[in-house]
Structures are given as C-alpha cells and as structure tokens.
Image 1 (tube, rainbow, N blue to C red):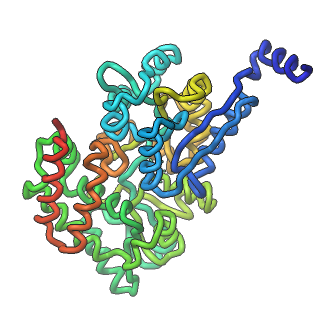
Image 2 (image 1 turned 45 degrees about the vertical axis):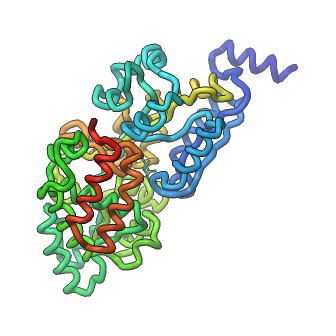
Image 3 (image 1 turned 90 degrees about the horizontal axis):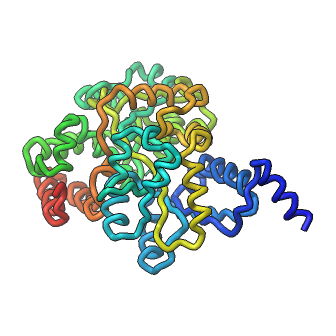
Length: 411
Ligand code: GAL
C-alpha cells in the first residue's frame, strides 16, 4: 500500500510512471554489441520502474540468425513486443506489406517527429500512407578502418581509390603482410562487396541497380566482380571463421592494415576496446567512395497483436527522443537519426560521420536492409558463393540478375 501511494505521489510529480507488466525487446545486439542497447533499457527502467524489461537477443552480426528466429515467431503468432529492423526494404518489403505492423503516423505527429527526422529517412520508413517504425540511429557502411601506428611503420597511407588500394596491397605483401585487408564470415564479405560496388559504379549507378534501371549483368556491374576478385586476393584465408569483431581485431593488433566495416566497428573499438579515435584507430571512406555516405538505420516498430502495447509506445517514444538517441548512439558508434542531437556528446569519429551525413551524397546499404527486400538480400549469399567457387564475374552477375527478375526488384 505504502509503495503504491509513493508511486502515485511520484507520478503526480511527473517523475515515475505507473506503467506495469512486461516489455520484450528483440534484437541481435548481444555481447560486445550490447552496451548501447543496455544504456537505453536502463533509461527505460528508470522512467518505468514497474515494467519488467526482457532483453531478448539472438547473437550473430548483422542479424543473420535473429531474422530467422523473428520470422518463426511472427509467423507463429508470437511477435516480440518490439524488434530491431532496418529502415527501408527490410521493414517495408517483409513485415509491412504482410500487414504485420501498426501504422505509427499518429505517434510521429504527437511527438513532433515529422520535422525532427530527415525527410529522406521518413520516406524510407513510409509505405502506403503510413510510417512503420521509429529509427534510433544512422550507421555508415562504407568505412575503411586502419591502425595509424602500423601504417606509419609500414610507410603507407590509406588508399583513396580501389586502384590505389591494390597497389598498396602489393606493397604491404612485399613487406611480409600476408593479408593487408581483414575480412570475416560470409556477411562481412558481402559488406565488403557493397563498398567495392559503390566505388566501381558510383552513387548513381548503385542506386540504379536497386531501381531496376541498371542490370546486374550490364558490363558496368560485371566489372564490380572483377575488382572484387582482386580485392579478395588481399584478404585472410581464414575469413569464414571470424566474426566482424575478430576481423576488426586483426587491424587493431597489427596483423592486417585495413578492414571495411560499418561504423559499429567504431562503437566496438571505443566502447569495448577503449581505443581513442584518431590514435588507436583511424578511418577513411572506403576507396573510391569519398563524398558518398552509404547509410543504414536501425529501427523498432510495433507489431500487430502484441501483449504489451502501451509499454511499446513508451519504448518507441524513448528511442525517438533526443535523450534516448544521445544516450544510445555515442556508445553504439552511430549518429542520431534526429537532426537536433547534441554533438558534444559524440567522439571525433562520430562528429566526422555527422558532417558527412549532412554534406555527402546519400545511398542505401544492400546488406543492411535499406535498398532491397529480404527476398533479394537473403539470396545474395548464393550469388557470392557462385562467385567464390568459380571466380566467374559473369556467372555471378547473371545469378544476381536472375534473382532480381524473380523478386521483381525495383518494380
Ligand atoms: C547491422 C546493424 C548494426 C550492427 C551490425 C553488426 O546490420 O544495423 O546496428 O548491429 O549489424 O551486427
């Protein structure tokens, strides 16, 4: 009784809520990827102390395992209260077209978000007159990470183009560096591919691939695979056994010179490894992609028929708020999706990412759900396997086009 009265008094004072029950948040931010989410959940817990927060994670970088578990749950009528999903086609082409999500337009209006998030981002979250999730961040895919002290020791600088990269690779190999570029398990190879493709094609032709205007078997797109093959010759042979963090470790520990990975790698290096941006690690746009920001955004939505709807609304309000975004993102290695974040809370890498986000040309990521539906991206692994086993650019390109036709990409 006393506890209840105290809670009521606190609510009257506006500090503590009476919200009760559970809130299950589903994501792939486990282990090393956990601290940013945990900080946000802690903030939620502070505001809604009587809600039991269940942090349901499925390990596996870029959601390789989580998406399969999510599918089983959604189709089995047991949706998590809210789940991580990439803005763009991963959200729209999978769960929105299937009628599984609630429209959040009224929440956007009541929270004033229509003018707080960039228009292009809201467009990515919109379909059929509705807005279908709330973005918590902006990540960049096309970043090349390096270890400044090791580059000085080897006497090389970060290459600006893929051609320059290949000659730097030869120089490094001459100095005994076996694998100048560190890469990890399958999805990280696809991640490397999208930076090579952006560099070889340029932003307009990259976008044309996804709108269906440029065919995958156009000579320009076939050429991507030719360059990709040469870049792969600079990578480690044990890639398939490494997580993205272990590939990053190869650079940090000085075994490899470079790694192409999204800027969650900055989150890992700063939050987990405690390195200082610019000293412990350096960064540059992936070769030949300077001036272009390949974006992706993690978002959360409200599935239809969840058990704890009111708690989810409070969760979405928090992750869309300035306080929520500025708590989460400095730890995550991403910048806020909101345009009014407090940049003084962000490190030197993130401040530079925020500048590029404002001034660069923006394109979307394939591997992280922005430009293609899962019906395409989940089959892209097969295209990659065809290339890796045959080293035949045309065969891989034809396979990609066959899938694009099958899923009616861009139509
Ligand atoms: C991405 C996701 C990031 C990060 C990364 C590595 O797909 O958007 O937030 O978690 O995977 O797992």
